[in-house]
Image 1 (cartoon, rainbow, N blue to C red):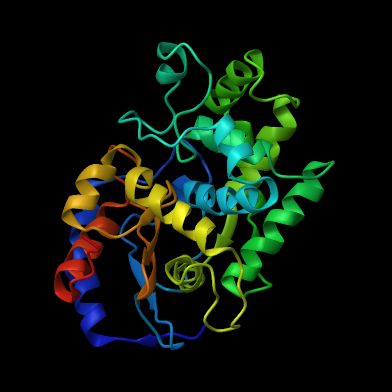
Image 2 (cartoon, rainbow, N blue to C red; image 1 turned 180 degrees about the horizontal axis):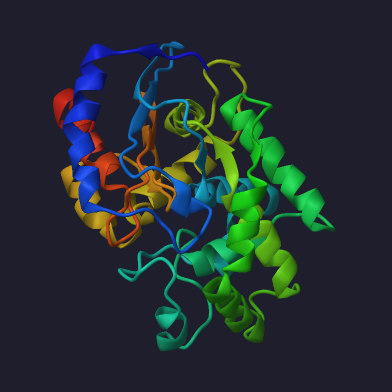
Length: 309
């Protein structure tokens, strides 16, 4: 995806960049701790093929929790709504993304939504295939189709770093397995999930994927329907209600764009019928969202009236 530099967008990036000093990179995953906290980049992709960008757009981003939206879309197509939502709920939690508390407190092990780690692990468990490799290839093929980029792949260093430090995710899996929600062995699932999160691209590819969701599942450049409109609608709704971790309500009020963040500092935005947005700013706030990225989206939404509300 070729993107033109945009003077107005550059000015917004530079206005938002100082906010990154208030955050820190996700060094609890050692490979992510190598990111430069002052980096900030954005790409905006329009349905007519136009793309504008600013900042360090060559930097690669691993999807991390942004991948939760993509894996959800895949299993909704493979399994159907009834199957998926019998096993994972649709409600926001208000808790941190890696919390185990609600699983215990509610008395049932069904995770409240697919955007928290417990729910995302259940969704990844649903990806069809008889091996980690086969299931990963299914997911990779879908991601490449969404991005219209065959070079997208897994950052093995990040995947390995995540696999080795995934103690809390393993705990979530064992809890879910104890209650029969997950039925496979835990380590292969953690391996698949770690590689899912370590899929790597730049913010231009991320904007391309965001645009497919924004356009109801049709890729404007290829003209191909990549997912049913209803799947895209469900995913965008989760992005509004749960996509920015436990800051989703405030984000919806201040910015009003369906969006999903990841602890790499990525944010994917999908403004229905209008644009796809990809952002990378690795300095995070205490909730795991890109500080510079959120400020940049806030400036952008106000300047161009992007809120859907």
